[in-house]
Image 1 (cartoon, rainbow, N blue to C red):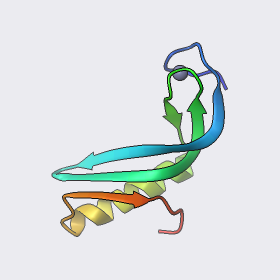
Image 2: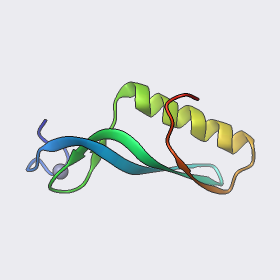
Image 3: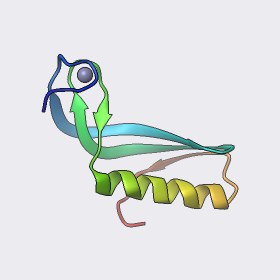
Length: 76
Ligand SMILES: [Zn+2]
């Protein structure tokens, strides 16, 4: 698809690193599948992936994690 951020590049299937901050917690997810803009590098993820990310981030917050870097896994 055409990138809605830079309105110039096209997105291609790939993986990206996504950083989420919730309260005092920072969770970095690596190798998150999605569409990556070949021009600006912005990544776009499906609703399913996004909700899985948010769910895992909420879990980390409730566990009192301050910073965590993890490989993304859909099964949460
Ligand atoms: Zn772009």
